[in-house]
Length: 333
Image (cartoon, rainbow, N blue to C red; front, side, top):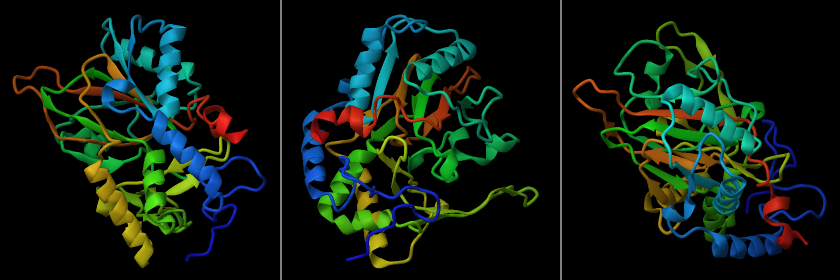
């Protein structure tokens, strides 16, 4: 057995254990808390993608009932899919909607990442091997994207906890997303072998190489080291960092970590029965607590017509009302 990890890991991420007697299903020493949470999570978890979907009649003013329906899905699966019944203006009208929807869920602090627009919202489309920063990164191509959570490479003080992903225009074909709740991944890994969790909660579980500009060698981001699983210090909820792209992660070199990573990759590849798959149409989108997701490759029209365009708003905030105390109040009493 590996030794338990410290209260605060060296990298600045909070460990899975906390001082005191507060309900904490993610602490490996709190088996009773875990079992109660596990049973509740399974019983309340959505069964199919359609269970995540909520229609928004007027995107300029989502009703309290519609927001409550989205929150219900968020509490059960950390994600919800919305469908705007009436069309929005293309990019600017959609950006206004995305910002307003985020605020309804307490999402305020946008991540103004390298490829974001000046308003910190990022348009995702195929740049066709163009120049500039976006051309270097796979989200701005039509190639498949493997399993990951957004911003896994960010420093501890800039972790991505919430996200809105909005479809302005779909591709002509392809571009389907798969979604997976990190809490369910944790649940299944802990059931299989608690040592998998110990390994991936280690402060040196994953090393992310520095990001350098290939044109001039300038360092854009330094090497990053930290755990896969940690606790969000503010809400005591599970936080996950992960990418299945082998070139993006150098894993801690020990047998249990290798087994844990292999188990997680197999879990995501199989997916059933907890995976959700959805190809968004115009006016649809995802609001989530930065869940695991991937994307198939896609094709845009060959006649020069406008191609696939998504808007991505990444937040340092977690969605309000989805902390352990709010979601699992009856279990904590």
